[in-house]
Image (cartoon, rainbow, N blue to C red; front, side, top):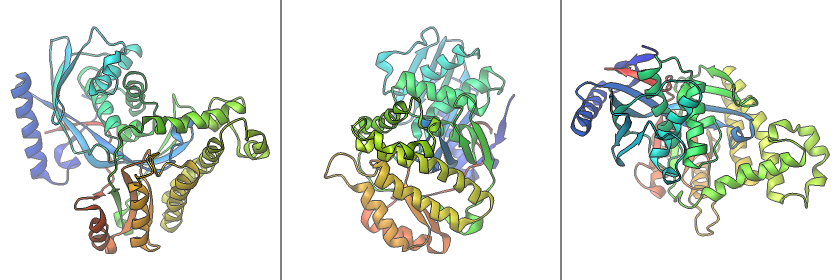
Length: 410
């Protein structure tokens, strides 16, 4: 058996955790007739720094959080992978048909088939199993439920058929392959790597096939702050084109300099020749390249600030990251002129904080959630005031989870 952790080491509320695994085991028996279960977990993630830098092979700072997806799993001889997911129902794939399927795009089956496809293409073992799973990772909260799901499917194959030998980077690459090739989402590698690895991680994606990963030990609570996700509402529907426009426009700038990714363009070269760009690419592409060049360096500074326990500097960098995302990257408000929930949420949170802590966009942007670092002695008041505008349970208070994707021993 490879990596594993006991139930009481990963969940703070032991009673709720035991009820949860019991419910999943019963569901596995009821849905698939499996009497014995193994349990696998993958956490959601929060981007801390490096907004929209990973897809240009830049730097990021991210962490796994204590909301996860958990599955009760049993090996089978059916030749299929069959999953029942609470909220989605059953879906399955045949292990004889792992090539991308058009009808899978935008569905959970794409993650299931895509991960197995990557394992086979890269010389790893796959096999049939049945699973019954649930999720604590809320969809649309920019905690990357899609990457979490794909990583979970990889960890199940890793534990059942590969003796737990697949590295977090391999699992992340398998999940990214599933998202890019099978699901149809042009994402980078940050979300998957944070879920697969656990804890705070600083990553340089210059060599995406073998990214440089550094785990950072830091306890926000010990330093008097809570990590909060602020759900400002707003729909993520019909935003795929806006998400895709960011890497697309950044690449037009890189291509002007004869490069594939902006990480290959130096700041000096960019600003020396910036006057040549106007008319060759749209103005917003230039602005987004400016964001990237500053943000990828800022992510490195944020990681160093945590390592040096310089929280004041870290918070100032987090605020600067949010300002750059809003003014240069322009991923705060969607195209619909009547939809400003995210911008409203960030502006209101900053008004409440009044210079304390930090607030910035969470994840891809455009709609949904913001991220705030809130002083613990002000947390209750902050939540009460934010919920006046956005309603009950619009603030998620999270902890950093030290474990990435892993088998959980009951």
